[in-house]
Amino acid sequence: MNNETRHAEQAVVMDSVRPEQNADKGRRNFLISAAGVLGAGAVGLFADALIDNMNPGKAVEALGAPIEVDVSRMEPGQLILTEWKKKPIWILKREPWMLQALADPTLLRRLKDPDSRQDQQPAPQFINGNYRALRPEYFIAVALCTHMQCIPAYRPAPHTVTPWWPGGFHCPCHGSLYDFSARVFEGSPAPLNIPIPPYYWKSATVARIGEMNVHGLEKDWTPDIW
Ligand code: FES
Image (tube, rainbow, N blue to C red; front, side, top):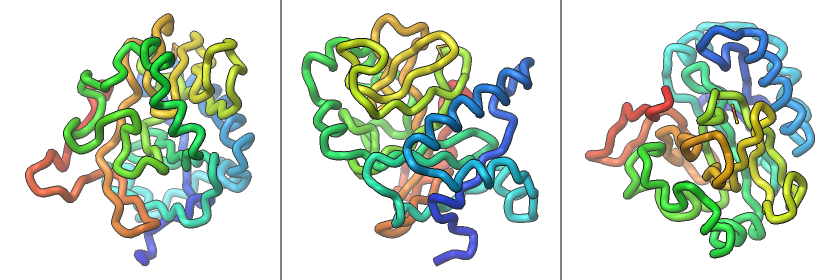
């Protein structure tokens, strides 16, 4: 395993979530998200987040170099937050019931873009369907709401925000609701599904985020929202 590979609980987040004007709000949003992740069990993650000890490896990553995350210790239902290109990145280990909820026809009718036809993921022919992932169990996405780029909170418990909502991601800023594939529901101010970064599985347990290794696909693809 590469020395640069991060174990899930050692994943590092840094500030600078909001590229635009309001740095204080961006910091607050990051902390709001932190509460959601801690609730999912990633206790060690945000201790690291508070220690922004830039080293050469991290400096390279800040410029956009791919990162590698070892997910072998993740528990079902756990969400971890890491960073690529100074953007927060989610990795969620989805449980079977979450995957079932993604295909519920009643819920699919409530989504703005159930088939992810908008350009919010690399190579739609590669990451498609209800899972929006290369492996259904692991969901990897850019942790930014497509309305004004707050970080949505992870809410795995069903029916917490509205009676019909199966759980997923809830933006604390203006209330956008997403499912466990970060597809946005009708009635939300967010216009689009949350972007998926380019990535691939370097091994059974190590995800390499920041590039793809499939011949002919866009290695440097960047979501429109950036
Ligand atoms: S920023 Fe998420 S709903 Fe406005």
